[in-house]
Image (cartoon, rainbow, N blue to C red; front, side):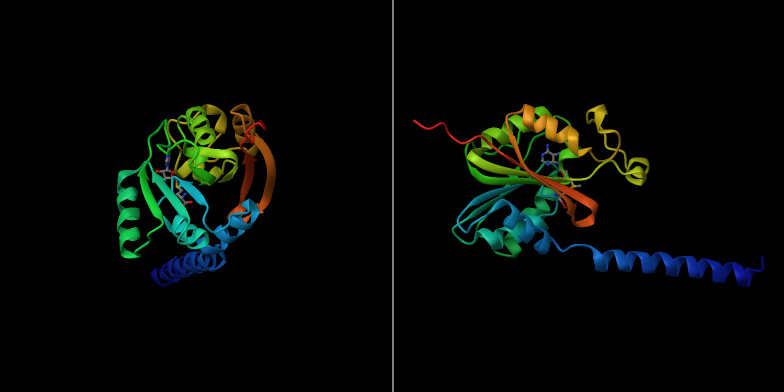
Amino acid sequence: MSRRRFCLKQVSLLLGTCLVAVSLCLTAAQPSDEIARLAKAMGWTPGQTVADIGAGEGEYAFAASALVGENGKIYATELDGKKLQTIKEEVAKRALKNVIVLQAAERDTNLPANCCDAIYLRRVYHHLTAPLEIDACLLRNLKPGGLLAIIDFPPRKWLTETSPVKGVPKNRGGHGIPQKILVDELTTAGFSLQQTFDDWPDDDYCVIFRKPPAPAN
Ligand SMILES: C[S@@+](CC[C@H](N)C(=O)[O-])C[C@H]1O[C@@H](n2cnc3c(N)ncnc32)[C@H](O)[C@@H]1O
């Protein structure tokens, strides 16, 4: 192949990759749209307390903070110290008064008991190395009758090959988690299954559970 044809092929490959990247960015759901859908599905109301477990860099927690309003509260937790620091800096920069940033532990959410009306984990459950301990915490952290949402995805081949998840139970079957496994784990922990959405943005699913209400006297 001539040098010129080789260069042209390289340039068209590069352009193709850029086009795919741009179209993925353009079609990806915005955190505020996804959180608005989650809030509707879980019935959040202003003044409620909601926790984002494994909040990453905080974009979803910040979107949630606008929905619960100034009388509500968002707990944003993270295991990774660097991400936790990023969330703290961003909370200060945006002057968000209703976001509490909390260091999570591998086996403990570190949230108070009965503190939350709703809790969600977005793309976090399949990273949990001690899921049964965290499930027990989530049940304690919710108020009686409170709701838990797990947004996740089934194992993805390319992610499993490029970025395997370390330390998680072997039954996940790769990077991701089959929906049935997390439903089995959370119902065994004491939650009841409420609703599933298989059309969540970016090929994720969303499963909503309820903590049993307090027994009537
Ligand atoms: C794929 S990221 C998702 C981040 C964010 N939820 C999002 O949707 O953009 C998974 C996050 O879970 C966090 N994580 C893993 N185990 C955790 C645990 N036990 N408690 C809290 N966060 C955890 C990781 O540090 C990482 O930031």
